[in-house]
Image (cartoon, rainbow over all chains, first blue to last red; front, top):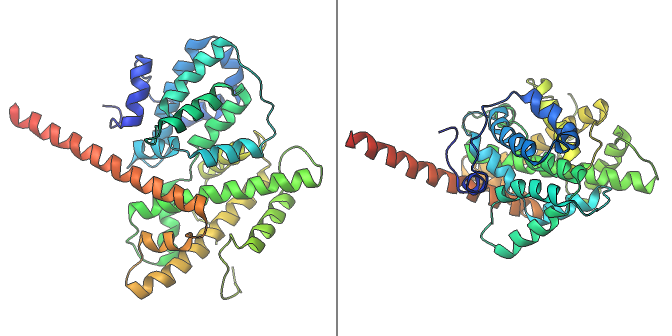
Length: 228
Length: 107
């Protein structure tokens, strides 16, 4: 078995009925994400194949001790997160062709129901209307994650204790990812206020960080850091 | 304190994440570095606070982190989601392993 069968991946395979491809290196993932619009013009089948590659790449890239849990953790996204993510980016909603809708189905079936059929129906309705640009961004949002091994090392060095449990690293990775989201979204808000465009610059991130501190979303140090 | 193992792979992950959250497909390298630094500082402060809380109880546990983010509902919900999914996966894997043992004994 390539990876342990979790209920969420099983739903995907039921729909696809195509054997997954062999694992591909991370470079392919990096090059495929921006190239996705070009891939789609080749037809529906290619995107199906690409998605299988993503499935294999995701687990391989992440911590090898728990591959599938990472990919499924990232598959799970609350509606709140999705709405916040879509709202913050400057997206133009267009209606897709039938061909693109077919391709979207592949991604849709991967999403777990979270035991709520209405939520799932909402998600499918939203996702079916995504443009390629939106879809690729959403895919990056879902699949990206901080490395658990690095996080574990960081926690060990901070706490001085070797006993960092797996749930702890998972939770801290999740918290950190959401924190990155808060930073980036606030930086985008700052940019629209200043009427600037293009890639986010460090000054925007600094302003965003300052505002988050004022809102109390950043843990404050009781003692000022004197040495670094 | 920068994570000593900050290699090209972790920067790439942060880049993908930033793109997913709304940045350009190719974020500026200075921005990525800054975000990474801020995140490390954030995790450090969080872990220190959790340790302060945990030391009263004995050892550091997940509960301490959850207590710290209790006011931040999206984060709290996400964490409980992640934890319950992890439990589910653990159960699923356990069930799979039991089946394998049965197969082994049959043969």
